[in-house]
Amino acid sequence: MAEALAELFAGDANAWRAALLAGRATVRAAVDAVLARLERCERGPGALNAVLAVDAAGARRRADALDADRAAGRVPGPLFGVPVALKANLCAEGLPTSCGSRLLADWCAPYTATAVQRLVDAGAVPVATGNMDEFGMGSSGENSAFGPTRNPWDPGRTPGGSSSGPAALVAAGLVPLALGSDTGGSVRQPAAFCGIAGFKPTYGRVSRHGLVAYGSSLDQVAPLARSVRDLELCLSVLSGADERDATTLPEPPVVPELADEHMTLDGVRVGVCPELLEGEGLDPAVRARVEAAVDRLVELGARRVAVRLPSAAHAVATYYVVAAAEASSNLARFDGVRYGRREGGERSLQEMIAATREAGFGEEVKRRILLGTYVLSRGHAEAWYVQALRVRRRLRDELDAAFEQCDVLVAPTAPTPAFALGEHVRDPLAMYRADALTVPASLAGVPALSVPCGFVDGPAGPLPVGMQVLAPALADARALRVGRLYEEASPWRDRRPPWALPDEVPA
Image (cartoon, rainbow, N blue to C red; front, side):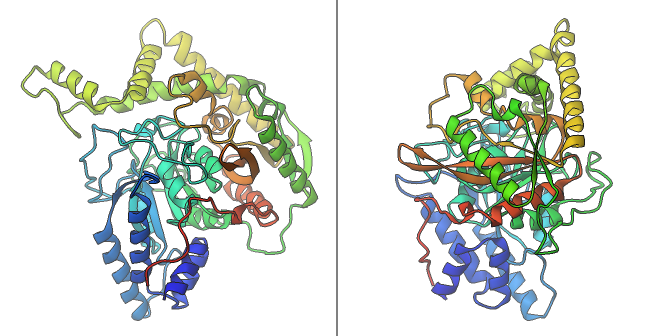
């Protein structure tokens, strides 16, 4: 049994499901092994601090039910027995949904998010909630009220944010699949920093029902996995209209384009944009790895074409105005009356609300609420918020024009490899610039994939680099096809971080 369980941990979600269906382990044994590993990863001085809550009882009940279904001959779902970690801003009934905040530290969701329920209906087993930047506001995992998550490649460095915990858990081999949320790059950037795959779908492809809102016109539930093939499988389960979310598109679930194993990239036009590949602050080593990846795509049959995105230089400023404005509105509901903790209950209503928000919110959340309130205020809205919406529209038009010249657009996911914990804590603008290459896709609502494309030298060892693949709206399957064919022709997916637990697991 120990050898069979080690085989599970060595594979991706597709391999995990196949091994369970072949009878090489029971779901209960596999889940028990995952729970044991989660406990080990959070103990001692080398803890990743990636987990906020573990649902051991619920996971074991789910495993027993799946084993009973298999024994009864019921048709297994496409994610049969696959353990999944959830970002702490996704509701799952009975589990803490803290959003990485003191304000919601003890709040348990009374219902389950549509995306989570669809995974469960497909046979997945939620096992834990992952650490995150508070309410999704951060690019390093350091804004969590429960301490920063650490990168499995170098524990002194950030795993990225805001989906820091889910990314670290997948990279360390503790779970093969995780759900995060991507507002301005919160899944893609951690995927790049941790050497795994992450995908932001077209806005409206996946229901946001049960995702605690940060920026409603930007937020998307987004998966993280060890392979693009797993992302394709997960998206086919997650996607599709939802009557509980009016922003979902009336489109059927995404069907992967890779039905033919002999499919190539012949004729695919790969766009390369100087505004994204030659911008200020881009690490030369990162650029070199992405250029090499583009050359590899050309070797696989693709054709390189040049495109322009003049407004990309204004994407970070535009994003932070729009996102902060929406955050100011969305987070007004956390007032000590309806959700979470309450401070100063013996005072007046306004004093109680002020005390609750002062004690419950961290510094970065307060900063963005104040910024959002300012750009929406009388006398400033036209100069800031309305102007940001105009730039957003222009960027979307430029991307539409670029996609008339190319089928996908390729760029680095992040301008640098994972930076040291604490490096940008006192410099919010430097932290915001880490999102420079991911926010264009978020503002335009187009799908974007991050896939590993190499490594650069770091002080403590190699650090992963991610390549981003953008496609037109609704062409999610195309971006994933290009990423998967690149991944299968490259050696990067199989490299494991030095922190990853050994394959020996309890029998």
